[in-house]
Amino acid sequence: MPRFVHIDIAADNPERAAEFYRQAFGWVVTRLPGPMPYWLVAVDPADPTALGAGIGQRSEPWQRTVPTIDVADADAAANTIVEAGGSIVIPKAAIPGVGQLVTFKDTEGNVMAVLEADPASQRAGPPAGASP
Image 1 (cartoon, rainbow, N blue to C red):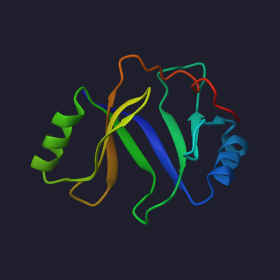
Image 2 (cartoon, rainbow, N blue to C red):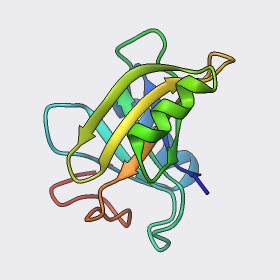
Image 3 (cartoon, helix red, strand yellow):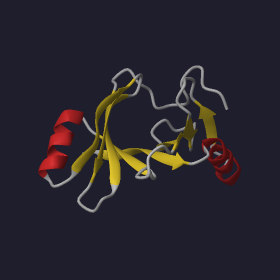
Image 4 (cartoon, helix red, strand yellow):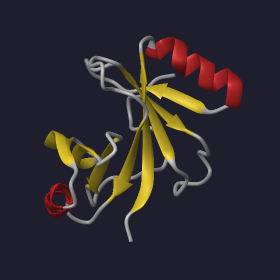
């Protein structure tokens, strides 16, 4: 059964948002390496099955907090979403070390994503090279 596995938090100022979540909740927030400004949030580093989150730069008006649902097959999930009346916002895209992500709108206009996880990926802790 698909389940929520990640929440993507859109922010106008990701550094400010990262500091807010550190201070407000004591979460471990680390910036991922690379050109894209993105911070990974570990709400419970001791529990690799805990729901994770990330903070990214808002670049489109539709970007809001986006929950992500774990699926076995991103292509099949995308087809089912469209058949059920939803629409695809961003077609399947590979996220290195994470998996295949499809962003969609449901029938009520809510933006969400489905993730076909890379079998080699780990959800425990930030990737190598991430910095606070």
